[in-house]
Amino acid sequence: MSFVETILQINPLILIASISLILSLLINIVYKLTTNQELMKKLKDEIKIHQEEMKKHRADPKKMAETQKKAMEKNMVYMKHSFKPTLYTFIPLILIFSWFNGHLAYLPLQPNETFQVKAYSAYEVNLTSVPALEIIGKEKFNGGTVFNLRGGEGSYTLWYDVAGEKQSNDILITTKQAYDKPLVSFKNSKITSVEVSNPKMKPFGDFSFLGWHPGWVGTYIIFSLLFSTLTRKFMKIY
Image (tube, rainbow, N blue to C red; front, side):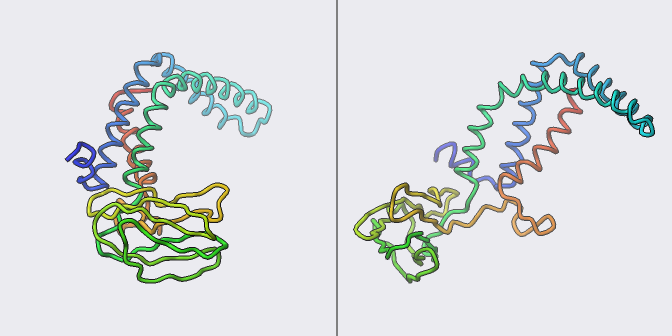
């Protein structure tokens, strides 16, 4: 079993929380090492003073505008210095987010369970697969054709015959946390796209925030904001 397969055996909520914590620590370490913390603290204190002055001068629009201008100037300087660490962390974060999207955005298609494939086309669509999948049903809908399929564990290539034109995409049926790209688009084709019904990942399960079921992005943001705030306080980062 590879390293990726091993860590994907971890509960998704715990895995995303753990990676969020590690990334928050690393980002804050880079931030602290690449910024002048004495200057950053001074700028933050000055911004806070200007904000307090703005509250005092609410009845004096001219004085308030002057104070607001000073606060904005200090804030621009602060943001300019804060931007430098982003240059060091941007590319690694993009790579990690890409990994998340490729491994934790969806749940796998389960062996011997029915799933759907929607083929979007104005033409008649016929489907075959290698190896062969069981085609349980085929229905037309406004914009294309939906196929109900079922098969054992393994990798499959689906072939679509649309008015003599052929297109294909790969799917994976497995009990492991793995999947092929569920949505595939085709350019300059009689079939515009196909969509496989991999369920979306919900790391919090049935629990929702006012009806919202966060996917991996929302879950990462929640933990990232929490851990980033805590680690910044602990490391005394300004």
